Image 1 (cartoon, rainbow, N blue to C red):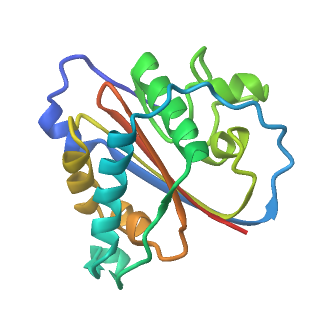
Image 2 (tube, rainbow, N blue to C red):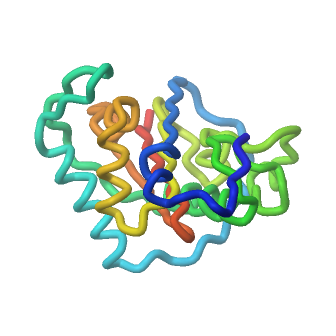
Image 3 (cartoon, rainbow, N blue to C red):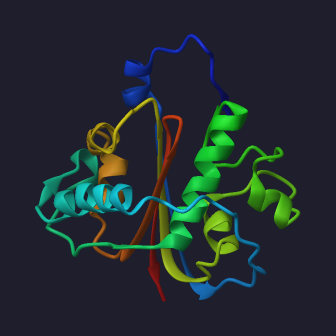
Length: 190
């Protein structure tokens, strides 16, 4: 886990501090969901997030070493994935960490709710918040961007993040920002 320094320059953070991950499983989760109580997202903010993502997906895109992706179907918003994204952004912000793994501290809700021995994974956060029947999940994280446009530009300049955004298998998205800590969760139901 990377501990952030307070003197970090935000412009560098946009490029330097992005992370992505993906996981494939074809089974139903056995986790007993204990959802995080994220604040309701403003409808206008949700529309901005969806517009940014689906505009990118509407056109073919070269994602560098990850390859070329044809235009992909529009994603639909998932409040469940939003809760998992908000939980993780809030945890990273409160603990001044930057990782796909939760801090295992007070603000790593899923790790505490599920009595996990280490910090929560993005898969565990999605399942704990109710996305239990999935065949593919992925997560992008970033810090330092002030707008959805900035964070999307940063993710698109990274091959793996771009590939997550353009993945045609994915059907659902939830995205959250807490004090410039961003989490973007993707999934596809079984």
